[in-house]
Length: 459
Image (cartoon, rainbow, N blue to C red; front, side, top):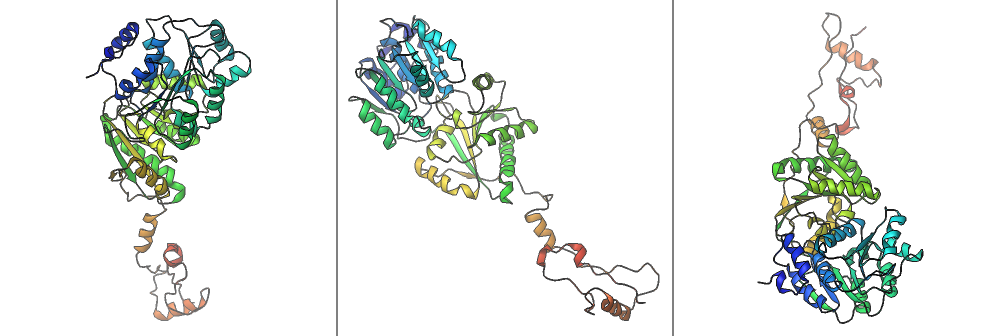
């Protein structure tokens, strides 16, 4: 059985790994670290939650142990698709490089350029950035990439989804041809394969699991329902979500709820708060300080439910997430794998629920084709109520069960005669002269007051 001590890492790195409580590398770490230490390009393909960040952080720190950074010329570069993932890489670097003198800078949006410029001017060994902010600094003349020795592209398939591929190609062209490249992705789309063929030189390919597989430690379940009315779909889904949380009880210590649209993130979070559930939203329209506070609160346990867009689906290492709820079926089947991968991490067990309406059938089918399995169906936890509102089945059922209409007695004590009823029918509107004439043509939807017969005293 391989241990970290067998991987020829710097003793200072091994000490930090040991203090972090790790002794045995994951399969992707065991496969990627040795060729990376030899200076080879690496192409790593593994599902989310398998420890890809340490696969490049540990060898990078070891390789950079010798040398000195120069102003505005970072020695290594890590590209991440989102601010949160970039910040997480920075945290990993701090953890594993704490016994070294290596320096870092984090370039992400939502933070002032001035503070970031000061760090770059002093010179950094490791530059961690999102593509857009990195190019902003480069175009302002504050950064040179000609000194990059090691370049890492993390979550490359997410880069593709977010439209960063042209930026990635440009950044590759700004770095030296002799750089070492470590390229990590959960899936290998054709566009990703084209880039690796163009910019990587004879890479060591490490594939520890079939692309886009789900972890066996995650118990999956699907609730399918048919909304009473199309415009009530979201309302009924929120009721199902609350019922699932209540059904899980204390086992649901915390959870991430994923929505497809930012506006739905806010609505779901507000609805959960209204019903006494401690929930906070996180999506790309919130400023960085707000997103950081929310994530810190969720990690620290002061926030139980995180309602998120896909900005939080990739790569975030929050190890103790007990549940994931897909409020919306993902539009892209790969996102299902990344979303539910937020639970069941590092060998822990987790649960993932998804709520689907008939309109989601196409996306649901694509997900099941991708993961090569049918997601187990469970019963809708929201039971039909006899006190439904006046829409849908309750109204239809009541209309079919209407009691026979009864005549209304006159205010006088004199008994009504058949002749009087006949005369009343002739004098009423329509003058049909029929006994107990009824309005027809509305079928089951005719209101009660129209169908009721009124008998008038003959004059």
